[in-house]
Length: 168
Image (tube, one colour):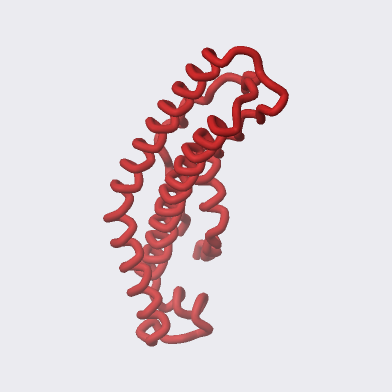
């Protein structure tokens, strides 16, 4: 039995190579940093939820395929109806149900955060256009958060992929 990695939608179009962003006053940088942090938090929550859903489904499918082998492999030879095995399955079902219920909300928050981040960047760029040449005390453009795909890969790598039983 093998489990495939989850397939996510098409990768978001990436911006061309980073253009050199202009320096800016500290107040605008703080505004932009706050927007980026909110976007990072939403992306991280969404990626974590998707990874947990994948992990719980994988665990449940493996148990349902062969409860005895599952118990022997992960619970030191316990019976499939032992308390530890059943408690683990109950937690996996609860976690799966909770995150399946929350994932739509997390994705909606992510879309709102991305739209807000785009609006903030546009307003900062418009304000910078009116300010003229950079001054010595201005700071550099804040670093943008990692892409959602990179966070998804990172979160999935944290989950131990269960060993695959040898085909018999």
